[in-house]
Image (cartoon, rainbow, N blue to C red):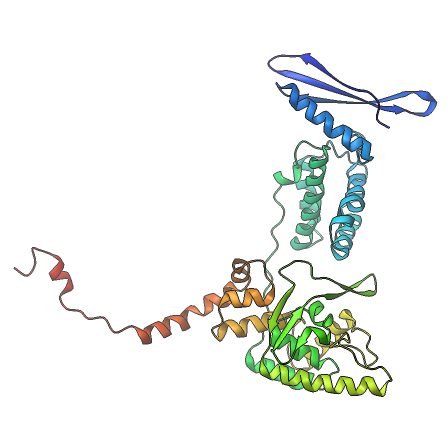
Length: 393
C-alpha cells in the first residue's frame, strides 16, 4: 500500500525544481522506504500531475523506480504486462524471441534510466557485423516500442531509440509468376495433395492462413464469393484458429466462375470421402484439410509447395508469392488498384500501390499505347507564326 506522499518546492535559479516524495511503506526490519523524483517546471500543477501518475502506477503494482530498473527487466515487464495482453499470440512470440535472443543478453545489467542514443547506435553497428540489416531493423522496432511504453509509464522522459538511425533493410525482390510459369506450376502441382489450395490461392490472392481457415459455410458457390472470417496459425507446434487481425482482413472476396466450378467438384469429392470414413460432412468442415478433416499444417504446406515449385523449374518461389502473382496478373489485365486493395484486405489503396508500384510503373507504356490509339495526330500549321505578332508580316 502506498503511504503518505508530498510535494516540496525548492527555489532555484532560473526556474523551479519540484521534489516529489512518495512513501512506499516499510521494508525488512521496519525501515521506511521512500521514492524521490524531481520535476523541472515553473508550475506546481505539473508536479502534481506527475505525482498522481506515480500514485496510480504504485497502486497497480506496475511501477519500479527507473534508477533500479534494468533494460532487461523492463523488456520482460513490457512483454508480459503489455504485449501479451494487447497483441496477438503470434506478435507476442515474435517480440519475445527478438528480446530474449538479441536484446536482453547484451543489455542484461544496463540501467534503463541511463540508456542513451549513442549506446543504442553502437549496438546496431556491432550487430550488423553478424546479422542482416533487416534483422537488426526488427530489433530496433521492438526496442523502440518497449521504450515508448517506458515513457508512457513515466520511467523515461524521452525515448532514446527515436534519436537513433537504424540500419535500412534492403528491399526484397518480389517474385511473381508469368502466365506461362503459372501454367507450368499447375501442371506439376496437379499430382500433389495440395493442388486444391494452390489453385485457390492463385485464383483469389488469399493468404495461406486465410485459406487454411476456410469452412464450407464461408464459400458461396452460387454468388461466387468467399468470406474471410477466421485464419489458421501454427503457434508453438499447435494449429490454432483465430479471428482476422484487423477489420480490413475480415472481408468478402469474389471468385472466378472457373474456381467456383472447381470448388464444387472438390466439395463433392471431399463429401464422398467423409462419408466413406464415417464422418458426415457439415458446413463447418474445412475446405482444405487432411482426409480425416484435420487442418493442414502451414509449415508442411509451405515446404511441400517449395518442392513442387522446384520440380516445375521455378526457383526462389514461396507460397506467399502466389498472392503477389494474383495481384500482378490482375493489374496487368487492367484491374484498378482499389479493387486489389479491397480484395487483399489492405488498410488503404496507397499501401497497395506502394507494394506493387513496380508493376504499376511497368503498365505506363501500355497505358500510353492505349492513349495513342484514342488521340488524333497533331497538326503543324504555322502555329509559332500565329502566336508571334511580328512574324508573317
